[in-house]
Structures are given as C-alpha cells and as structure tokens.
Amino acid sequence: MLLERIDALKEQINALQAANEEQLEALRIKYLSKKGEVTALFNEFRNVPAEQKKEFGQKLNELKNLATDKLNALREGFKAQAKEANKIDITRPAMPEKLGTRHPISLVRKEIIDIFARLGFTLADGPEVEDDWHVFSALNFAADHPARDMQDTFFINADDKDVKRNIILRSHTSSVQVRTMEKKQPPIRIICPGRVYRNEAITARAHCFFHQIEGLYIDKNVTFADLKQVLLNFAQELFGPDTKIRLRPSYFPFTEPSAEMDVSCMLCGGEGCGFCKHTGWVEILGCGMIDPNVLEASGIDSTVYSGYAFGLGIERITNLKYMVKDLRMFSENDVRFLDEFEAAH
Ligand code: DAH
Image 1 (cartoon, helix red, strand yellow):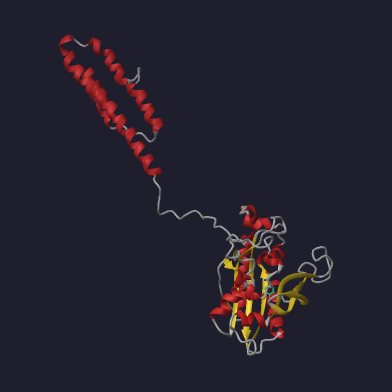
Image 2 (cartoon, rainbow, N blue to C red):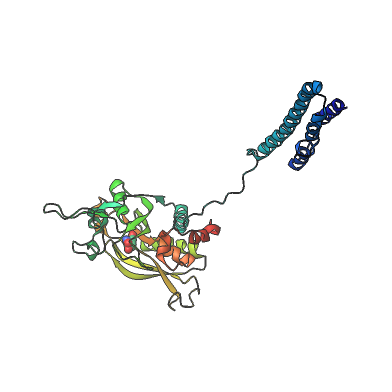
C-alpha cells in the first residue's frame, strides 16, 4: 500500500509543471510542507514493520529528494527566464537623445560670416595675445592715445627699464587687418571674427571680453560708395529687406573719413520707441576709408590702392536680434538661456 503510494507520488512529481512562482510555491506546500503529501508519508513510516523500515526509509528519502530537486529545477528555470528578460537588447532603436544647442554668439557669427562670404569675403585670423604694433601703432594710434591706457588694455608683460610694456590682449580685431596687409598685397577682401579683451568692470552692459568681426577691402579705386553699398546689403540680409541704414561722421585713428552706422530700429521700424530711445535708429558698427598711414605702415602703396574697413561687436548684434538684455548671459552657460536658441538653428 505505502509502496504504491510512493510510486504514484513519484510519477506525479516527475510530471510537475509551474507557470509562475506562485504556482511553484503552491506545489511546495502541496508536497513538502508540514502537511504536505510527502511529509504525510514520513508520518506513516512509524507503522511500517521493523524489517521493512530500511527499504521504505530509502524509498521515502528518494521521494523527498526527488520532490526537492524537481521544485528546485523549476525555480532555476524561472530565474534563468528572468535573467534573459533583463538582458540589454542591443538591436532596440535608441531613445531619441536631446542634442545640445549652438551658442547664440556662434549662431550670429555664422550668420554674419555667411552674408559676407556671399559677397566674396574670405576668413582671416590672428592671435589674441598681440603686440602693441599690431593693435595700436600700425593702426595710427598716437603714442598717448587713451586706448593704450591700463584702464582699457590688459598688458601681459611688465614695464621694464629697457623694454616698454608691449605684449597685450588685443582690444579689437583691427589687429588682423595689419597682419593680413603685412602678408599679402591687394586685392584683399577679408572678414575676421574673433575674441577681444578690455579691462572693464563686468556689468550687464560691459564685459572684460567679447567678440568682434572685422571687415577689410583693399583694391584699386575702392570708394566710400562701395562701403555704403556693402553695409546696406549686410544690414538688410541680417535684419530684413526693409531695413534702412544711416552713416554718422565719427572718428577712428585708422580710418579717414570715419563713420558709425545705425540701422532703422528693428522693433518700431523707425517710428521711434522705447528700445531706440525714440530716435528710430540703433547703432551697430564703426567703419571708414582706411587711413593712408595705415596702408603705408603695412607696406601697401597708398597712391595706388585704397580700401575700407568696418568693425562690429557680435554681442551687440545678438542683443539686437534676440533682445538679450544682460551681456553676462553669454558667458554664464545657463542652459535655460542657451536652450532658448534651439529654434534658431
Ligand atoms: N576697432 C573698432 C573698435 O573696436 C571698431 C572699428 C571701427 C573697426 C571702424 C574698423 C573701423 O575696422 O573701420 O571699436
């Protein structure tokens, strides 16, 4: 009787299946818990006649081991399945990753470069650590010009009894004009974007570094009319086809005549508003015909060639295009600010 029950249970246990952990636990309770079927057989063991105890004992133990092994095997199966499910599927398409945004200064610099590139201007470059000659002397700055003053210019080397302080951080990109003229003869048609430095207290309206773009065109018979036409084209490409320009007489050591250019206010279209202080105009750049002294200082014959130059601040243009009110935003890397330029790409 007992032997038959053992055999029947063996068969049952061999055929066990479980769909999940809960069913597996139910099987454990059914067979191996205190009230389980296998345990019940152990309880009957004491009724087995002494001479059969050995045989039954062995069979019972086999049955218990079988049940334990079977349930363990099922449990291992679940674990393997779970592991498989957790594996990284490298064939799955990537989640859409959010890309960074271009810095507003980079966006506007590129826009300006593209406009002049369409007019045939090529890019030129020069060092940020410069000497006095390229930043000032070759550009016709008098020896006592205030721009050379400590208050404006960052000096790199100290004053020496033999050598005057002459290594500086460039305070404008006009130095690249000189470097270009030294290297080649006209025709020259370049723009040079770059970073410049001035010894100023950092506020919403001034910073110790900012960015400029310098333009230079030298050839035979270049006139102020050429300059005006190029600048009008530039302003209309940048701010829209209805934009007007106005040139006001000004002074720069390296140009004669010199002018500052205003564009019609991009907010009110020239009507006058708070933004343009009710003048209808906003200033965007300085320009002029290159002073013959400047051409000669760099080895260009001013009796044969003439040219124009202009210089603008990229931050200034960016402020006008995007109404950024505080210059410090450009160098703080606040992603809430930078993210706003996502759509400008
Ligand atoms: N270098 C001038 C500045 O930093 C800007 C400038 C004015 C550049 C007139 C020019 C120019 O080339 O012709 O304020």
